[in-house]
Image (cartoon, rainbow, N blue to C red; front, side, top):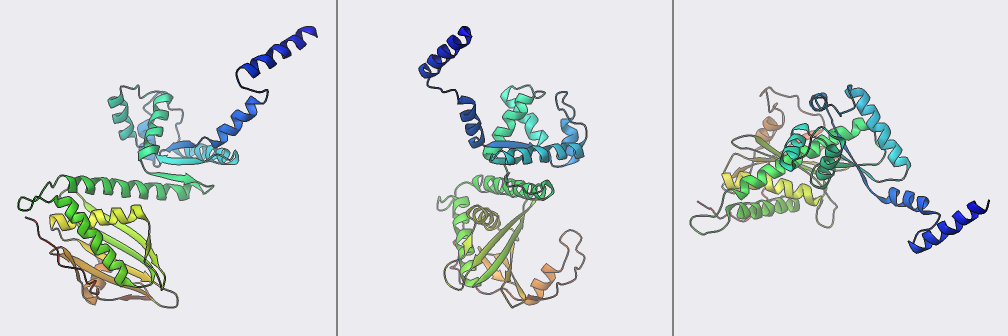
Length: 313
């Protein structure tokens, strides 16, 4: 009994000396709830199979793996913790470990890579949604980011204009931003869904933008989506490639309207109603016709009133 009292007394002095209290475990649990967590997700069976070559990777069935990840996410949410889901790419992971001098066959390396991709890669915040709903969103964000990074590199590699010395990529981006704002200003009120596509030497670039504009005030758009859209449009402008833009507008008590433009000489030239119909009702991969949607009006592109573009050679 005396030994117990002496131990309590010494423990109390130790806690006071080091600034702690007997309730430190409770405080640590509170801090733990406020520390964000990140879960790296293998979204498909191919990526999962690639990770199975590591001896320390503990799963052998993708369905079971997804079930366990979903259980972990729910448990973290139940503890009041903010959790981010990041796309885990096995090829990127192997490159990361090779460049960093890490042993790829360890949980610590997988954890470190997950932290890296959470800071710079595609992520989705977990708010209790089903994992089957998270995966398509996560993949979509990863594709968007890869497209934006590739388009940005294309613009950066163009260098300066031989005649005027102006940065071609920067000038193209400024021009694309101007065209986008003119398009949104002229489109009027409603919910707008825009798609910009342009071919490059290695890929077909595609950007999507969602905006909404009330009867008064400017269009509201996501900053990152706007930058991605302008970057892809800028590639078409700088490379003078056959880019195009389609705008679909939805408004209450009226059919959806679809308009289209082609990029010509640094500006958006309106398509005719027939050209818009053909573009919207043709499968981009097979070239086969697609049935038109009911309740949709296919209309000619309208003049957005953009200033003429300066040409760089």
